[in-house]
Structure formats: C-alpha cells, structure tokens
Image 1 (tube, rainbow, N blue to C red):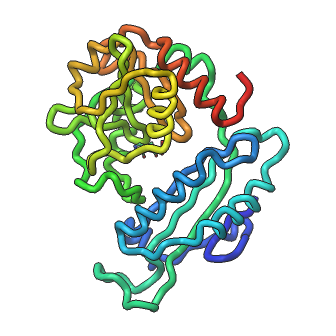
Image 2 (image 1 turned 180 degrees about the horizontal axis):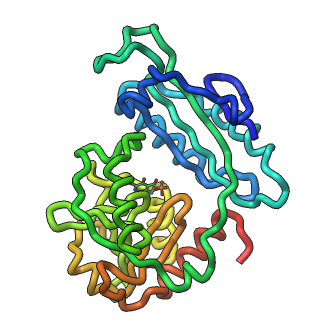
Length: 282
Ligand SMILES: Cc1ncc(COP(=O)(O)O)c(C=O)c1O
C-alpha cells in the first residue's frame, strides 16, 4: 500500500518523518478520520470543514479541499474488491524545525501532511447486539477538546485503563457531568427522548453525533442538549456511543452497573438509518 506524505505517494514502508517533526516533538498537529464505505467517503464536506476549523485553531494554513479529495480517491483505488470498509486518515503538523516551543519562523518549513487509507473490520453484529462495558474516568483533558489535535495522551491512558479493567472504553466525567468517550460521543435515551452533551469546548463535536442528531430529527425524536450526570446515565433506557468507526454502538454497563436496555430500539434504528445514509444494504 502507498501512503501520501508531503506531496508524494510513497510505499508505506518508505514513509518517514523527521525526528524534528513538531508532531513528534510537541503533538503540534491536527487530524481527521473519515469512514470509507464501498470506496466512498462518508460526509466528506463535514470532515473537511472540521479539519479547516482545527487547522485555524492552531494557526496552520487552510488546506486545499479538492486536492485532499483527489489524493483520497487515489488512495482508495488501492483497496481490494473485498475491502468494503476502510478509514481515511489525514494528519497535518507544523512541519520540521530545530526543537523550540515557539512557532518556526514564517516560511521556514511547510506543514507535514500525511494521508493513508486502511481497511477496517466492521464491528461484529454480536458486539452491537450485546452492547459494550464502559468505565468512568475523570476528564482531566485540556479545555480545548473541540480541536481535533493529535495530542491524545489522556485519551490513550483512559482507553488503556478501560482495557485493563476489562471494559471496552472509558466515559470522561468533568465536574460531575458526562462529556464523551475516548474516541466517541455519548448519547442516552430516556422515555423516548434523546440526550447528548452540548457541543462546547469540552467535547469533540463528532461528525457522527451531528449526523445522528439529524437522523433523530428526521424521525421526530426530541433531542435535549443539556449536560447530564453519570447518575442520570445509569437511569437511562439506552446509552450508546457514536463515532466515525464506532458508528452507533450500544453500551451494556457502566462501572459494572447494567444499562436497562443494552440493545434498545433507538440505537438500533439510528444505526440502521446511519447505514442507509452511508449507502449500505440493510
Ligand atoms: C474524543 C472524541 N470524541 C468524539 C469523537 C467522534 O467524532 P466523529 O463522529 O467525528 O468520529 C472522536 C473521534 O475520533 C473523538 O476522538
């Protein structure tokens, strides 16, 4: 497989980044992950818009969307006929320069730009049917979680803690309120109503979250975007994750407490609607 690195398609094994890359030294960069269903990018425009927002937030120049789309199409061409699902990864860092915290002088380095497409395995139907176990952890991330930066150490540590506890993932809790999971947003359903945390600076505003909110609206499901606590989550009828590769994934338990309906009708319906929007057969 080839990857795209700094303007060139190169074999994956030959793609190298400098030890002075600011992504490596400072996590000084941003990224995007896009689901590829049957060789088509899902919600490309929304992902591109978020990438441009992330770039602007860390004072990197906007990227050429049509060039990115062209490269993505080229990478997708390398997928085999049996590889029906894949992910497109895009990363841009502040380039390569002798280590110093301040930005490199203007014009001294172009950003490092990496893109690859790799096959993904859909989440097994049994996992979706049963739901997954979660733990809660304090949300000790910085206050600009809305920027999709590659600085993901708190997320990595929380995910690992979940794995070491036998759970699938961790739910971040800030000031008693649920924010999100390590790489997905969280919804709950109660008495036919859908709840998810508001898109403040304390969550990454997921593209899947956005799509699911639209799908809910199309089904006349009422949505409440006010913060909720873990206690409220435990009293919900259904709880589920949303994310680019997670799609809509029901949660079965939280810190060992079972969720009332781990594979409830709301999550099932919204997953079906999401798949329909992605052009998948039911
Ligand atoms: C912290 C965090 N929250 C939420 C999401 C879900 O966002 P999306 O639906 O755009 O994948 C992600 C995705 O990686 C994430 O890293």
